[in-house]
Amino acid sequence: MICAAYSDVGKKRLENEDSFFVSDFSDKSGFIIVADGMGGHNGGKTASKMAVDTIKECFSHNIILENQKDIRKVLKDSIELANKKIFESSLCDEKLFGMGTTIVLCYIKENNLYIANVGDSRLYHIKKDVINQVTKDHSLVQELVDKGEISEEEAENHPNKNLITRAVGTNKDVEIDFYKFCAEKDDMVIICTDGLSNMVKKDEIKKIACENEDIHSCVKKLVDEANLMGGPDNITVAALRF
Picture 1 (tube, rainbow, N blue to C red):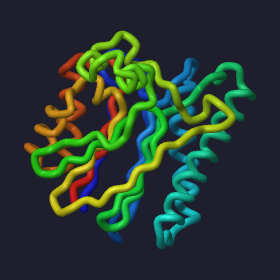
Picture 2: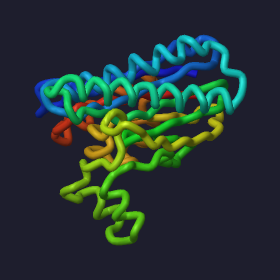
Picture 3: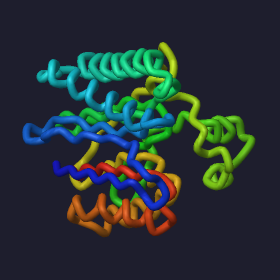
Picture 4: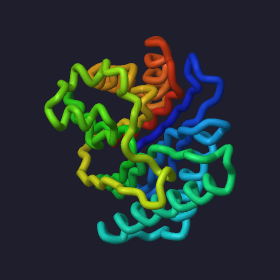
């Protein structure tokens, strides 16, 4: 199991409001966090960093996670605590009011992946020649797709594709989606902010991931591709190969 992550400000933004963390996978377990902050006056950067730091701290107090129930509880509790801290901070400083962040939190234990998701950052699973989006976007456009009002192809170019319907820290309570699956040898997992997924189609993500055996080269090439497509947003990519 090898992992790498890379983040870039992109071509249009002045500051990188994404945050991420990749733990040590030396004992065949660990976790990855990817967060895309939002809010003016540095609110986005503050929110994403606060979320990552809070979740890291929660995991540091739960070193041994034996079963699915324990793992899910830490995923849930850590994101709810991050939500509480961000929301309360936003009420104490008018410059940070309304700040929030997306979260994809993935805990890996051997070949089992436990995922918690809020917002429109994504986790993809690549098995052989097939890429599957595991997480579901919490966005206005995804709701239109679910209702059958627009196609997935139309969603990719929709003018409101950046409007999300859930975030960590924007409300007193947060609704979290959970996923679990098992990976096999040579499978890959890609976790990214919408700076990648809005600019690079998933089949191209798969192609780049499969063509770059070196995991560090893989994440850098994915970020480079998003920048080649215009790089209008911050871009963060984490990759894990089994």
